[in-house]
Each structure stands twice: as structure tokens, then as C-alpha cells.
Image 1: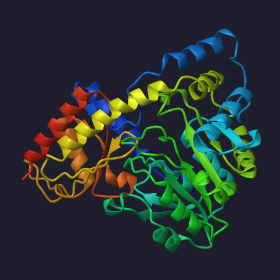
Image 2: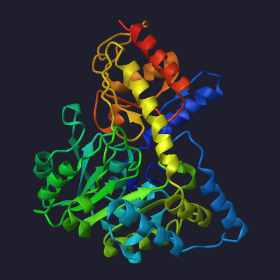
Image 3: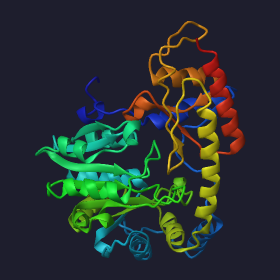
Length: 401
């Protein structure tokens, strides 16, 4: 029975963010007081107008099979969204809908990668990027981008890592886990490199597009450089800004050949996401958007409080993220210290295990995102919980020697 699993499956590991949540919830079930700051979802409920659109769809019998690529109403709403928000024009055959943003990425890699094709992934990265590439028998090329460069890949790094096997560059802005946002000029500079390599495709994960602070301006590479549009897959979804993580709906616009291939993959796997989620997403994309700014006011307030408190802790250094709802502090000043039990904190994973065991703080260590020694905390929860978490982290750090 040792060979029952495929070789491709043996190359990957379960999602670390999911597994940490499972571990934290198991401790809660045992009666432990655990604050879970590992999940990547807003704590706000799905807005009522979106829920009412779903209820209306159910009452009208919209509960049958729907086109996997999206209902006509949803496809049109996505086309209009891209034009309105990003100045990108797509035809309906250049749009597809998946079961969340992760599913879009999976479909894209499965539809395009051949064994040994390389995918450039700037680190820190969202934990699933490399594993999805490996599932599709591609090769992740990890490019480390530290705090000195604001966690963003430079044109020089990009060019130095392009080979004749490079198939994709993955971009994520605002970033999970760092909140980093690529400016118009930074994307333009990356485009100038990419235009020299016409066989390199770009997947830009814009899922946090609307969660941006401090008068920041969002840009996406296909609109920054129109010549890149014909080989860029622009991914988005309703999970983050619209507080619809459980509705499972992501979407993208891109070259029709790639979209057709992705639809073929999906037709033999999930077929589609829920018809009810599609109906709700039409309202999300086309209806009232005012709640997004209201949510962002709360997110910014929480961000500022968490960053200020973390930077008061000896050994922790936290930059201010311009987008998303995570902080990605350095714990370099903690490495090498000892716990009261005499155990040495050698890695960021050691540190996060220490926080979970000693103070009940569940976060994600930086190695999971490809860059140490850092850790990720989500501030998509209430201020009381966040203040409690910061106090616990400070207490834990003060107990190290």
C-alpha cells in the first residue's frame, strides 16, 4: 500500500494556514483559550443586499445546473466590473468563474503547464502558489523579496530568473501575507522586462484589490501596460472585499485560449460553483459598494493599533502594510532566545509554536510563505481580540531570556 498515492501528491503538503486553523480549533475544543489570527477572512457578515439577492434567486427557482464559466448575468457583471474598475475590456469568452480564487489558479496551472515548466513566484507568497504549480508538474522558482524592498520583486530579480523554461510570473497585490501593493510605476518597470520575453505569461492575483489604505491607488499590470493584456490572466473574486469567503466564487479575465482550456479542466472536475453564489455575486459586483469603504475604515484602525503595539515589543519589528488585512512582522530579534523551559527559539516556526502553547495565539510562521524570520497575523477581527492578542505576545516575549 506504500505506492497507493501518486508521485505528484507526494510533492506537496496540506495548506499550512488551514492546518493551523484546525490545530487552533482543536485546542479550543479542549477548553483552551485560543485567539485565532491565522484565518484569511473578514469578520464582517456578508452584506444584506447580497444575501437578499441569493434568497430571491432561490425563491425564483435558480437552483439548477448553470454554465461553469458563469451565468450570462454574472459574466456580464464581471465584464462591467473589469471595465469600470480596471479599464480592461473583455469579451464573454475571455471570462470564467471558479470555485474561489484558488480554483482559478489551479485551473490555469493545470491547463497550461507541462512537466518542468517554470513559474516565478516572489516570496513571501500565498502558501498555495508553489503547491498548485507542483500539482500541475511545474517547477516553482522562488525569488526572495525582503522588507528592504518592501516585499516586492524588482525588475532585476525578474530578469535574472527568466529562462527558456519560464511559463508564468505570479503577482499578488495587495499581497497575502505582507499587504504590499505594487505601484503603477513598479508594474510598468516589470512590464518593460516582460515585453522582452513574449512567451512569459502573467497571473496577477488581485483578490485584495479593494482593501487598500492611506489614499493608496490600486493598479493591475494588464491596464498599466496594455501590451501585456494578451498574455495576462487577471484574477479576482468576491471573498475578501465582499465578505463572501464561504460562497466560494472567484473569477478571471484573460486570453480566450487559456480561458477555454481552464473551462475544459473545470468541466471534468467541479463543473461550476453554486448557482446561488453566482446570483449573489451579480449583486455584489453590480450593487451598492459603500460598505467596502466603511469596512476599510475599521480595518485601518485595527491595522494601526496592531502595528503600534507590536513595535513596542522588544525583538519584534513590524512595517505598516498598505493593503489587505495582515501584518507580517519580523521576529529576528527573538531568534536565539530561550523559553522558561530552556528551549531555544531557532526559527519563526518555533516562535509561533511557542506563542500558541504559552499564550494561545494562533498565527502563521514566515517559512510557510517562503520568507523567514517573519510571521503573519490577520487583523480581520475585533479590536478587543486584537488588543488581547498583542498583550499576550508581549507577555510571551518578555518571558524569553
